[in-house]
Amino acid sequence: MRLADKIILITGSGSGIGKATALLFASEGATVIVNDLSEDNGKGTVQEIEAAGGKARFIRADVTNPQDVDAMVQEIIGAYGRIDVLFNNAGISGVGALHELEVEQWDRIMSVNIKGVFLPSKYVVKHMMEAKSGSIINMSSCIAEIGLGRRASYAATKGAVLALTKSMQVDYAPYGIRVNALLPGTILTPFVEDYLRKSYADPEAGYASLKTRQLSGDLGRPEDVAKAALFLASDDSKFMMGSPLYIDGGVVFGKNA
Ligand code: NAP
Image (cartoon, rainbow, N blue to C red):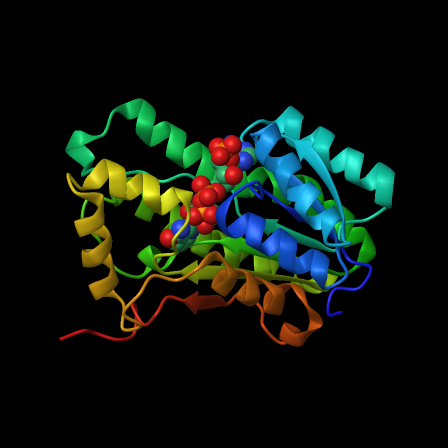
C-alpha cells in the first residue's frame, strides 16, 4: 500500500493513461479524485475502482476553465481537507505541420495542454504549501526531446510542460513539494487510436510503422505509464525533483539503425 490514505487528484482520468493510473493508485490505498470532461467516462473509472474495493469520487471540470478548476479544488478540500498528489494528465493531440493548422486548433491545444497544467497547479499548490508537502506530476511527452513530423503544436505544448515543471520545482522546493514530469513514448490509448485514424489512410499500417520506432518493438500500454506515475507519487521517489522520467521503449536514447 504505497499510497495509503493519500488524497490524489488525476485530471483526465476517464480514459487511457489517467484511468489506468487511477485504478493503480486506488489499489495502492489512495482516495482518487477522478476528473474528466466526460461524465460517463469519469463515473466509469469510479465504478471500476469501487468494484475493486477502492475509494474514488468523480468531479467534472474543464481544466481550461478557472471557475471549474477552482470549484473542483474547493470541493476536494471541503471533503478531505488536503490534496497530497496532483497528476496533471489531461491532454489532447494535435496533428499537422504549422501551415496546415487552423489558428483555433493551435489555441485549443495550447489551452488544454499548457493552461490545463497551470490552472490545477495554481489552485492546488497553495494547499500543498500550507501542508508543507506534496507531489505534482506533469504529463509531458518524449516529443519534448525529439522532432516528429506533423506534430509541431503538440510538441510545443509538451516542451512547455517540461520547462514549466523545472521552474515550478524551484519555486515550491522550499515548501517540501516535489514537481516532476512524465515523458511517455507512444502508448496505445484512445488518444493514439485517434491519431492513427487522422494520420494514416490505413491505420493498421500506421500502427505497424509506429511499432518499428520503438526499440521495444511494440507500443507502451497505459499501465506502463501508471507504474511510473506511482513511483513519482510515492515517497519512493523522494529524491527526484524537477526531473523528466522517460517511459518510451527507447525512443529518445536508442536508435533502430
Ligand atoms: P486519452 O485516452 O484521450 O485521455 C485524455 C483524457 O483527458 C480524456 O479522458 C479526456 O476527456 C481528458 N480531457 C481532455 N481535455 C480535457 C479538459 N479540457 N478537461 C478535463 N479533461 C480533459 O489520452 P491518453 O493517451 O491517456 O493521454 C493522457 C496524457 O498523456 C495526455 O496529456 C497526453 O498528451 C499524454 N501522452 C500520451 C501519449 C500516448 O502515446 N498516448 C504519449 C505521451 C504523452 P474526454 O475524453 O472527455 O475529452
